[in-house]
Length: 123
Image 1 (tube, rainbow, N blue to C red):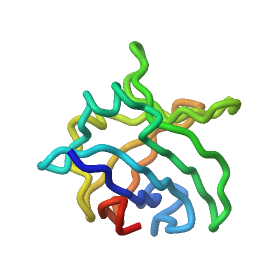
Image 2 (image 1 turned 180 degrees about the vertical axis):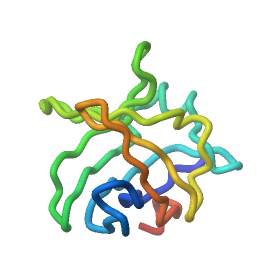
Image 3 (image 1 turned 30 degrees about the vertical axis):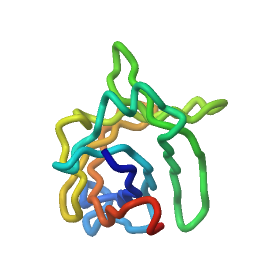
Image 4 (image 1 turned 90 degrees about the horizontal axis):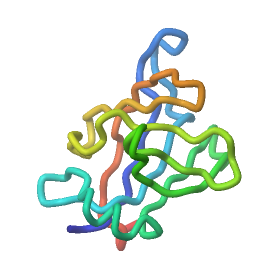
């Protein structure tokens, strides 16, 4: 298991036909050798995960990754009403060029492209 810095940027979707590299998330997650979420490590030490939501270089919220029994893996932003939910994050390979889906607080699913994945000590 290694902790990695992962950058997600909004991918192409209706309303954003070219995607938007100014909208996304920076994540620090424990990944296994296959670059998939190490769920046991993330659940055991959620404070070792980090999630930052940004728009145009402005940090909108900072939180962590937590597992909710009903919703699955969530980007939990303490004190904020706009947590987000990852779609099947445990099945995704967090490698550049791949895509993940994240539902916003209203339940609307958005695609994000993985732009970066590097060890935290290189960040």
